[in-house]
Length: 292
Image 1 (cartoon, helix red, strand yellow):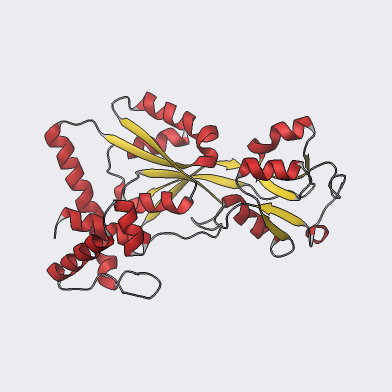
Image 2 (cartoon, helix red, strand yellow):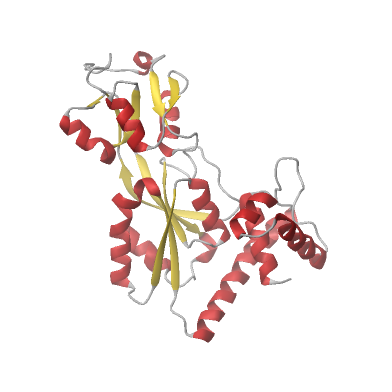
């Protein structure tokens, strides 16, 4: 059982297919398959079920997963000890909140632990960030979720012992152009929105998921794009948009958008990490800095 085999094992467990794991690792799919076969042969057990639409872990694979992460973490700690290398901490964040919420966290972390080399990885996709945390490529990641258990908003969680800390609420606004038929409404119910056009991003987008929880199938979904494109389309009267307050404040002040009188529940900014990696150098300080 070699460290490189464990890294490949974690990547397949996280990404659920050999092809996706190969892309994440920068390897050929044949190399990934060979590493998995060699590891299974050395342990005399099958670690994955070869299903038509993915590779879920077997019971043996589930038992190996926490051991794999501990062994890889210990190897990294040994390398740093031997080379007297500065501790490195790689944090992830959704691009939608990277500019508005992350810099203050990084500043607090730099003040608390100036000896840490901290790097930031941003991604448009939540799955990529959670997969990075699960595989150990990221120490922690900042995502958006609804109140309650992790993943309550309705997104996939990788097979890893993930823990989280709620940092702050992220208020949402249901907005339209002043010229929209609902632009002058003083009261509003879900029934009033039935059949209206809701401008949305990709299916995994946090704000789209929040809209589905709020409005269900009462509205027609129209794919537009990211926050900036969706806001611009709403300003042109093309439909209703559910967006974070911080993204529409200027438009509300300028009068190019108006807030509808239907208050959506806020999302929560969450820091997510592996519960079995609390001993990673700098991770606890990152949690304290994020929560300060």
